[in-house]
Length: 468
Image 1: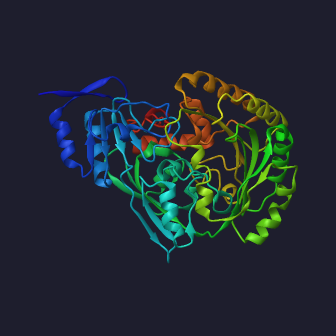
Image 2: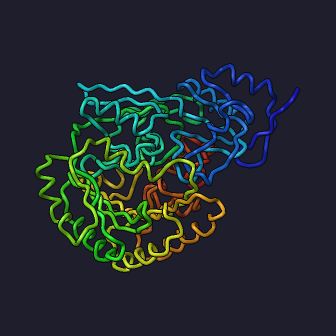
Image 3: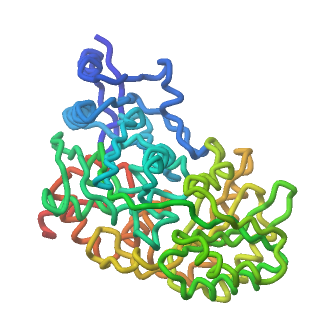
C-alpha cells in the first residue's frame, strides 16, 4: 500500500495511506487534487506572484458538507491545513506548503432578498460577483475597493470599502455567518446564536473556523460621484497636505483616498480619489474645493455606477505579479510622513508600485472598539506601501525599498495594523492588529480551536489553561 507524505500540524510530516485519501475523495462533492492532476496548478495559484506553495492535497469544496469532510480529515490525521477563499491575501497563507488546502473558490452561490435588503453569499464569491447581483436591485454592501478580492477573507478581517464611512466595515453589515469550527461542526453565528463566536468572527480572520457563507445587510446605492484629480509628483507635498486638511472634516457620504502611482507614459503622479455616496448635486458642491486646488493634470470626477468605482483599480492589480506590502494605521498624517513619502516615490524601483493613503471615518468610527474583534476604530488613515513588479529577479530591491519607506513612516504611526494588510510579520504585529481585544480572542481561540488547528493565518495563539 502506497502512502502520501503530508505536512503535519504543528511540524514535521505524517504518512497518509492512499486508501484514506481515496476515502476523503469519495466524501467530497467537489474534487480532491494532488500534484499532477488537471487543475492542480490553477487551484494552488493565488493573486500574489511571490507565492509558490505546493499543497499535498487540495479539497475543492462544492459546499459546506465538503468543508466538514476536509476539516475532519485534517483533524483525524493531524495535518497542516490552510483555507483559500478568493486567494487575494498578500501573505499567501491560503496555500499550505505540503499540507491540505481547503479551497472554497468553487462555492459561488449568491441569493439576494431585495424586499428584506439582505444577501446570502458563499465563501468563494468575489466582490464583483456580489456587486453584480446586488446592484441589479440598486443595493450594495461594503465589500472592498478592488472587485477581484474575495469576500471571505476581506470580511473576516474587517472589510474596508468605498462605502465604509457611510455604512461601516463589511463586518458592521454582517448579520450571520455559517462556519465550520475545528471540531467539524457547522455552526451559525449571529447576534443571537453563538454570540461570542460572532463577535470574534468579525475581525479574527480564519482563526476560529472556515466560514462557508455570509449574510449581509444591504443599502440603497445608486450612481456615485467619483474619479480622480491627478497632480504631478513635483507638487506632491502640497497636494498631500491639502488632502490631510480636506479629509479632516468630511460628511459620512464622502470618503477620499490619495495615491501615488506611475502613469502608463512613465510619469509619477499624486491622485486624489473621492467617492461620494449621496445626491450628486451635493457631492459636486462638496468636491469643488478638491477640484479647484492647484493645477491638476487631469480631472475625471463625474457620476458613475457604483460597480465602476469598485472596478476602477482592477487593471492596476492583475493576478500573478510579485507583490509585497508594508502598512500601518494612524489618526493623523505627519508632515514628515508626507515629505518622506514623496521622496521615496521619486526613486520607486517599479512603475507598478503604488503608495496609498486610505481613509475611513463616520459610520466605521462610531462602532465601539470592543464591539467586534476589529479594534482600531479611532484610526482614520491606513498608509499602504504596495510594491508590485514583474521580474522575480528584482524582488530584493523592491522589498528593500518597501521596508525602508515603512521604517521612515513607523515612528509617526500608531502601534496598530489592519490585519488584512499584514504580510508574514510575526506575532507582535498580529497582536498590534487586535490591541486590547487580543486576550478575549485568545480565550475564544482556546474554546473553539484549542489545538490551534487553524494556525496558517495571522495566527492568534490559544490561551493556555494556566493563563485562563
